Length: 219
Image (cartoon, rainbow, N blue to C red):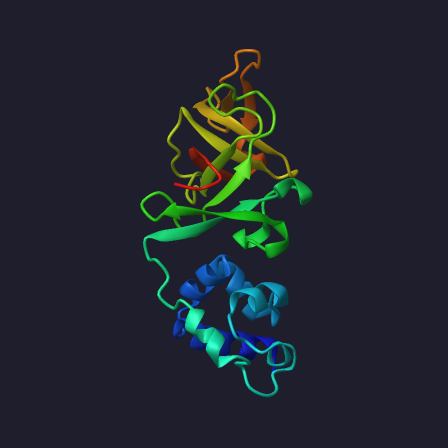
């Protein structure tokens, strides 16, 4: 049995075929599960730790019974709190740049923070702030919840803080302002020690809106 078939059986069993709920149970994004499917692979350790009662032998080989301990299944909660979503905290500096295709791979996840669905949604991520250019509002070491702006080339709400993902792998947390030259933006800091800098739009790979600073226990 191929790994994608094993993964589909797990989704069917633990969350009645609902891939998004299965991803929440594993504390990964639905995109990560889709990526596993397409690559015919999965995170063995994570699945074994989260899928209560699953047989390690079946998970490795696809042979025998899927469930090793029927009694353990009494602890499986198939009714995930629909008002809460777990958002990954990413260690992007171990990789450089944002993740390709917006798939959050487990090796870059430091932790998960629960949020109310009125605050966060699938695809949002939490990252660390480095440096003091955006102090005091976003001090060095703080955590921020960010969301990708899909159509930033068509329209961007200016004079707000954004994380700018540059094609060379750098990430800049700045206030984005209009430039006289329509092919550029002006990036500004809250810290007056840092002067505004122009940036060509052509070198920007993506823009992420800063939703809020967060605590480890979530919102």
